[in-house]
Amino acid sequence: STSSSSSSSRRASRCAQARASGAGTRGGGRRARSPAPAPSRSGASKRVPSEAVSRSSTPSDADWVEKYGNRRLNYRLQARAVDGVTSGGAARGVFVDEEGAGAEDEDEDEEYKVGVLLLNLGGPETLDDVQPFLYNLFADPDIIRLPQALQFLQGALASILSASRAPKSREAYESIGGGSPLRRITDDQARALQGALDARGVQAKTYVGMRYWKPFTEDAIADIKRDGVNRLVVLPLYPQFSISTSGSSLRLLEQYFSEDEQLARVRHTVIPSWYQRPGYVKAMAQLISQTLNDKFDDSKEPIIFFSAHGVPVSYVEDAGDPYKAEMEECVQLIVDELRQMGVSNEHVLAYQSRVGPVEWLKPYTDDTIRQLGRDGTKAMCAVPISFVSEHIETLEEIDMEYRELAEENGIEKWGRVPALDTNPLFIDDLAKAVIEALPYTTRMNSRIGEVTRASITGVPTAAVGDLLASYDRDKLAIPVPDSSWNKKADGRGANRAGEFSGNDPAQTTTNDLVNFAVVFFAVFFFLQVRAGANGLFGATGIFQHW
Image (tube, rainbow, N blue to C red; front, side, top):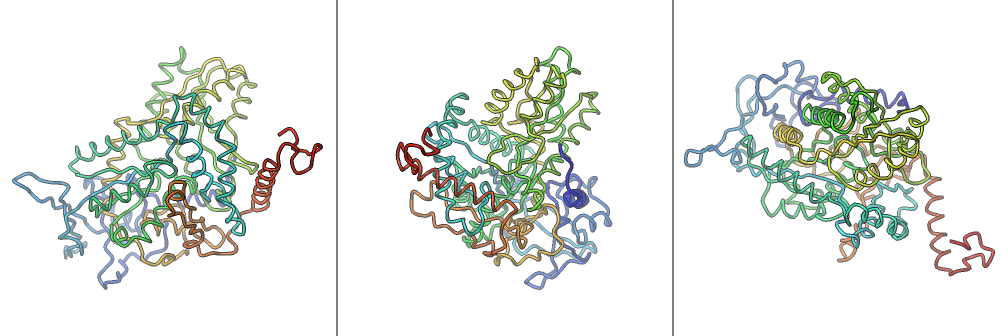
């Protein structure tokens, strides 16, 4: 891939330094803190628990201060015995300082009801769902970022784009069986994760919230409230963090937390990315090695082709998105694991699924395949590195479009590594991440924007609002998503754009001119179509044959 800018490199370096080894979340890199705990609103010392994992993995005091920004505090899970049987689901937390003087958590008498919210993209389950799904996608300002002055056109633009893209998208979904398997697979992952947690003595319930289709995030929130969950771990099913994937889902979640007093009382934490977790890395390496052995006569011949979902360059260079740095580090970790397994094939990373006229992360997957063909590559093992579930981009874009492109360019042997889905090693590692994250649950700030924005680096671990504050900089605020298709139908779709982003007039990107041109063209094209066969310019109109 292309080299990062110096600012991106520095950001990646800081993010790596702040990352806590072996933990499912990261506590450093958020803001400068003194080693001593800061006072809470109630006047008590701020208590941040240590990892609820084995003592053998506990870092030293110096390491703890460096990674988490405060003194180490010991966290004990006291399981209540019910009829002589220990219940992990009824655990109580007691925080003890280093001198041994204990102070019970303010909610220590509250029975733990643990929930895990899995966030994912969503996908149309039938062909009739395709157009409304596309509307929800294009109505998201994290997907199509318009200048603030033109944000009122988001809904109209989404309607135009979804109507124009729907026929081609329907064909794609029809080619993979008439709908996306993403919901089914995500439900399977949720059940498997709940089972893995139960096997480790943690009674928790998993919930699935999709960003652009059913079950929507608001449906999962309703279930969480109904079940009385008071400890919630938010787990986006994207290994690497991006403002266009995890960030978009978390922004919507922030809105729900801010508007709902009952939900705001739920202690929660976010695992923003987990590409560096050993179980995930090992599971990916094992699948790659297995595919090389099963799909190719000579396992050492194929080039390992990591294909990641692309994002616009402006997200990385202007908005500070860590996606590119995390993706490159993720690939290197997997390659290092493969080397330890004796797999030394050449590898390359490229980015797929670009849309629109703006520049996206390079190299592009299609261009790279053509170049590899010109260079004489004859065997390729494709690895969908951004995805942990089979869906349209693996089953159609990679398996069909890119395979056909490879064959057209002289690549004779093809294999594709399957998505992780419910891989036992992967699921068990997610369970470990959830358990490690539980002691860090906290309530969301009641005042949006309360968090200090100084010295923000990387993607910190925090409550939803605190996490998103790392992207709410003067010129980089992520717009609050517009109403989605299902809300629009029942009258609940009031547009809240800008409510939490501060309505900063400088909230623009370097692509404002391009965005304006795209919107102008879309509106003009819509009027052209409405004008009839001769269009706006009569029989000699430039769009006559459209």
